[in-house]
Length: 141
Image (cartoon, rainbow, N blue to C red; front, side):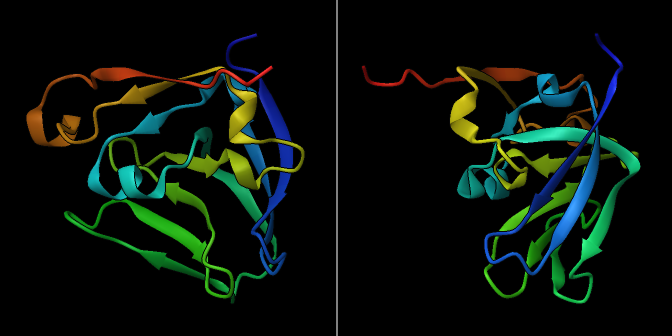
């Protein structure tokens, strides 16, 4: 049901960073983005509200990266380099969590993932966020 909160555990690849995420709409909020950073990173993300990520282990191992306007803060493990989550630029009250870091979740679990137009970001254009397309995964038989 839309608006439900689901708590999922996750970690980086090496396990140095361990967290819990209170996900808004669980995995139904999955998406990707076309901005220069997200395009290179290639992660499928799901949404958590501000305060919805609790680092259980490895706070001192997390590092962050900001670019362009510096509004979005992208967090990743300084040991293995895996991106775990970021504070969103368009809505600073939301965090995007790397779905592949969640226990038991793979980006290949999503047959279709909406791809949002981050190249023409709503904060730059003043227009609503545009859906750029859909990423589809069709497993081989």
